[in-house]
Length: 223
Image 1 (cartoon, one colour):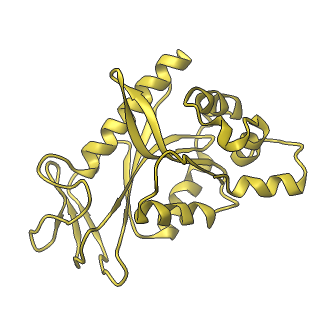
Image 2 (tube, rainbow, N blue to C red):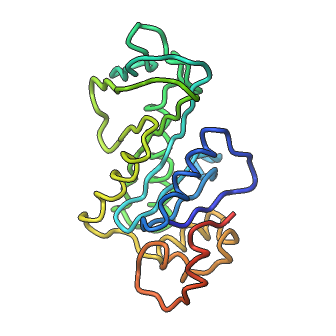
């Protein structure tokens, strides 16, 4: 997987850990872009990460706990996420005005609308993924989701689950080509992160390529 990090903003500790997850998955086809701004309603909206595989475009919301809380993480149909003792989960961006699900839904909509506008293709669905990172020593053994949002998944500090989430996409219909991904990344103004080379995107997505082995090594990480 090709890791691209927008240097315009500094990564949070949770985002740094997510970047590590991407680096631990060099054989997993895909392109992961961290900290990217997407046009939305005349302004720009920052997404923690975008992942492109040949099957999906995924808007990723990366969250971290601010304090140690232990127990089951509860995701109600509305409002902030809770711990099983009834307290609001002390997660960044999780309160009565915002919650991770509403944020990732807005990000998906922003990416979908912009992508549809620039490609003139109405098939550009965008999935959502919320990744919650824990503090050292924190124990959150399970997730209680009362109503799983459509086209949205949640991963709580489990690299194996994240890897399986990506692996199971292999059997789904191919939607994205290197040409399409490269075109969108160019429009977003981040093509310089991989030297504007479409062949690197093709190699990252697992498309046939004639790149040399030493060049393929650069696919694992680009900052």
